[in-house]
Length: 241
Image 1 (spheres, one colour):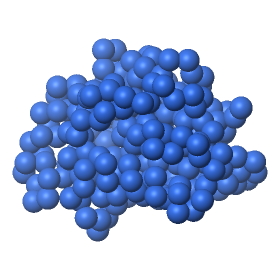
Image 2: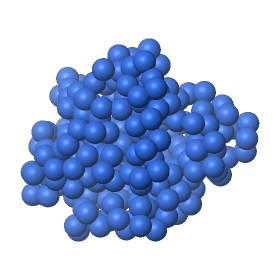
Image 3: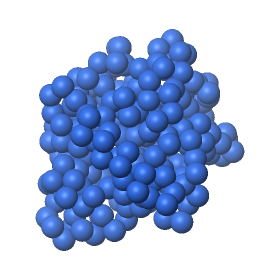
Image 4: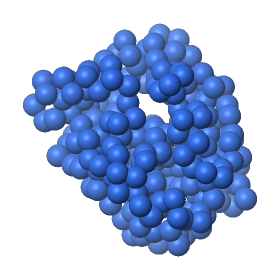
């Protein structure tokens, strides 16, 4: 049995994993899906990246979890990297699923293509609370292109504006590269949320992990909605010893 803690990405909350958790349990594991501070409908969006990290760190500590496989999706990768620096003794492995692996001293924004940087800055500036609402056309064409339109629309209704400040905060991460925690990178071969090529997820992000296990699966950035059972099985593969 493995204890998984699943960390969602931007625009999502812990409910994004609702169809993944039961499959992990069917396979004999325990899975938790906390919501990052500032994320989800009705949340206080005035948070920085440190607040995001502390919320997941507290969840692990307050629940006295140990021997954890900590998995992060997209923005969640930046969170689990920092959590690993704070509670390395509670973690068994890190799994980055099409996730950011920031370099020391950089921000998540630094790893976005210029078109996204410009768009997100404009949307945050136009908002009343420094948040970014993901435009539906980007969601439909780049994030969940493997869904039919009805499913894409239903999943979009689960999203909420994401706090912008955590994208901008620079992350020290000076301890991350020295951690001896095993790492895996789970790559969706059809993921175009970051444009393939110069700005793509793999091998740009995966290569920053050093020695790691690479696991691949078909599907978009949002296979959590379009094929959650397969995603759960691949997370088990990525998280096993």
